[in-house]
Image (cartoon, rainbow, N blue to C red):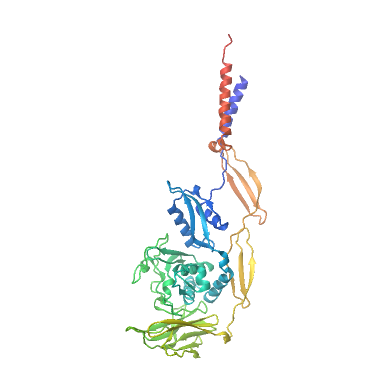
Length: 503
């Protein structure tokens, strides 16, 4: 009898201990799996995420537009799914051919744009404005409609709206300002939302750049707008979808609204711009602290016949280069000191009999860029080297800083003049965890495991939940259920056998 009771007790204890939970593998989110797929450029199983094609596309688009995917993400992917339930089974990234992209040159170009546009103590809106203008004057819209990456605009100088939006997002990311790309399928167009001063605003860099291209011309009509503003006007935006709303009206009447030249910054306290009234252009300096503007120089422009009964004024353009302000008239490019003194002729254009005149200009990196226009409004570009000016050409040394457990690696570019820039950080290295301490989970209490990184000595503790019966029961397939059933049958057999009377 004692033996039967002991066996029964053992079976009861077995069943109770079966309720202890077993810690399973940490579940990965859909975002984590997509990032993993790009990190290793491989197909990943996402069936356990239980998402449809639409949900997958929404998640992927949000990651892509926020710039959270690696630079070589093409913006497209492949997937498999269940045709009955529409649940997606797997995700496969489509990546750019890295051999076709000079990533070092791209990083250097980003650094060059930022070093001439961003200065210490600049406010967030100043940084957004200066980068906006620097990007526009050095870019032109791709009429072939084939170039759509940030790389195309930053390195090649031309792209469609997607390239403009990605480039602006990339430049702001370098200085820590949140920026995402939004798009409208109805408009077949993309632009940006930027987050400054605890508010989101619309910025359309593409529509700030004139088409056909006019060197030195920058519109500020679509800079730091609310939802209501960008949805109104002669050319409203519509059809975009985003989780963010833009309602703050702080910049509704900002000084830049009617400025169509580049706004040049030598530092965070002063800017230079062109005010335009009919044929008179006023080159002004602006005190960024008080908002007071001072007239430096006046440029009178001719009202040009551009054919078909149309007339127009050329654009002065404005650049700050080699310590001087550069601007143009109909046939001459001038430079002057920032205080408006010492106005000198830098370049005179003698129209070769076709009636062309200077329509705009800007100067960057030892080159004067001109837009020429004739009376039929046909435009062409001209480049004039300025190599003898003594302008400092940046020459970068490169330092690779490897990733640590907590921070990503980075490439630092440093010029002899002191200018310093950093590339995008790579992913941090994973901790090299070793088990430091452990307490087993029981039926009644949770346990824990404490790990320590062998490289940085960072410690991390994970909780091991109480064991649950269902997980324990099938932990070894069907072996345990069979053993339990067998034990119950055995007990019943023993009790049945013991209850028989002797004859």
